[in-house]
Picture 1 (cartoon, one colour):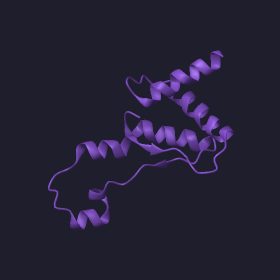
Picture 2 (cartoon, one colour):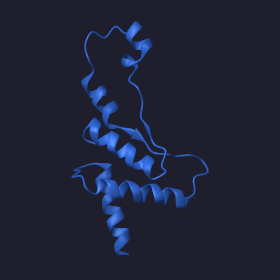
Picture 3 (cartoon, one colour):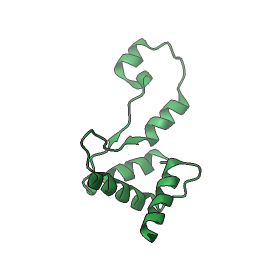
Picture 4 (cartoon, rainbow, N blue to C red):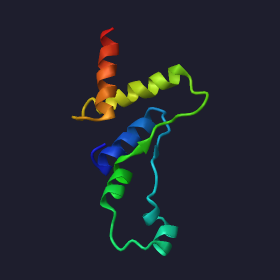
Length: 102
């Protein structure tokens, strides 16, 4: 996702479609431990941008192909409204469009 707003909208869309995605991680320097123990005197802009724009899709050992296909389909549907360049999501969208054409 390009912004935190995009990520949050995507997360809501996934949950509305029964997919339990999560935000990716809290940067260590932003955690209570990090704030109390960090020697960093400035913000970590790239780390914070990654945190604000990333999420984790479900992935587990006994996930069925049907479940994976559903997550793929819902993700591709949401992301088709975005213009992604040089990203894994552009690959997902391309693959989805090819699979629809047969």
